[in-house]
Length: 190
Ligand code: AMP
Image (cartoon, rainbow, N blue to C red; front, side):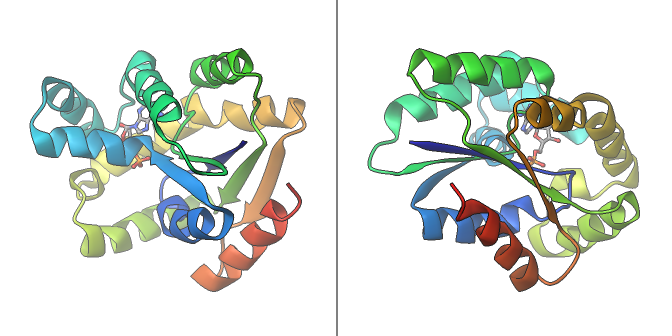
């Protein structure tokens, strides 16, 4: 099985590119953000707790998303691998993921990182707000906190995957097709 991590700051285009990636490489797409939004829409207890954090631009607790990932690994069958979109987002999550995979005799295949300059993040998210209507895209304050959270908690993963020799950076500036071509050129190596 292949385990691809789709990495990048908010607004880099992870969700947009994920659709083509899972189709072309027969992967199961696991977006922790989308799973959490489903919980919110279903009005579950977990959803209620997650909503306050998501609306503030904070991360939900590591154990919550780790549990979601593990249950997907254990239930999804008939795919050639997984595309983890929005997970891991902290070093602790990355370590748990490594352990989860090691137990199965597996390992992360590659961290595919879509990078855009900071100045472009706000512009991209504001554009997405007009299309997808996500609550956490609507308020400038929330977006700013998500960017801060990204730099503080998530960006250290760049070094984590570089050290593991698994970091592959893609220039996320360009049209959707251009960025997809770059991503596929990297994924074809694995
Ligand atoms: P996303 O759709 O990936 O932008 O995620 C939306 C929001 O869900 C994030 O801003 C976080 O509040 C929460 N979230 C998604 N994935 C994670 C994760 N791996 N760890 C903690 N919080 C997460």
